[in-house]
Image (tube, rainbow, N blue to C red):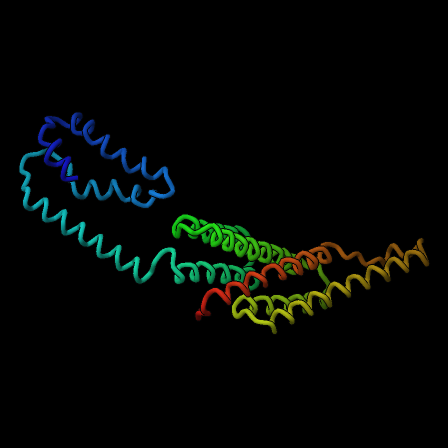
Length: 272
């Protein structure tokens, strides 16, 4: 910025030549932004250049004032960057725990949030947390793989939970099944808020009970159909989508619990 102010700007006689002289300097920022390693400095380069260079007509440049202002701004930026790097480092434990807690909160929202626009909000929040981690923390390959597994586990669990809740709201399940599903949602929300063995067991018990009831109903219908094929068709109780959803939920829960245990062992538990 100072090089432009003292070496280039005094030779500019009109606005077009000043714009032409600015172009090479301003092109540096977008060029640096195209590389992942320098995307942060590239985004801030143009702002800092405009602040230091103060482009305009060279009618009254005060070198001492310009240099003093530029040094004060630079020292302030260095001090603020050092404080953020020490207190809240982007690739440190605090940053990773914050993103992981964000994943858990989105899982709880899938269990208890309002169904109106819940699907796009859930997917957008999960995607935003993953992008924050990969773009801001410069993670190691193992850390990136771990975060990706956790994101996929919570995403899969949240999607099947939302689909079950939509089925409950649409009245596609039996009343006694809705009561058990509400108990299941409460257990899942507790598991996501405070990972532990008790809510995990409670959720598995409800899932297994619902699967067994649906399987027993299917067998009774098959037996009735074989005994009286001309009338049993009216009494057949078709499992519908809940049977497959429960199996998907069971597998998603097992994968999510594995990742939640990893979260609990890797990072200290925080409130909220």
